[in-house]
Image (cartoon, rainbow, N blue to C red; front, top):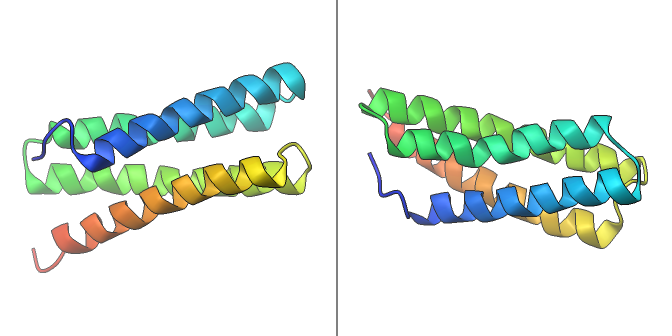
Length: 119
């Protein structure tokens, strides 16, 4: 249903690397393990679901996987806000990660609107 090296795949993979580094920093420097683990799980899940969407066998399968990735991106934004507001994340680090997550959300929402019109 799509190229493996499409822009969404690249952006979601790069975002997963940002999240992994953020997780390392949170656990090593801030000794925060619970919230950061949630962030790691959903932040890396976006790219995994995009990869699955790239191997979809139908439009419905593609749309379902992008939908899961989209929901994971919304969850990432929730955890980032919580980490910022609980003072585990500095504002500049939060803004960088949140903007990337928001960009992914917007791309996937646009894809979902296109793939779910009048089935």
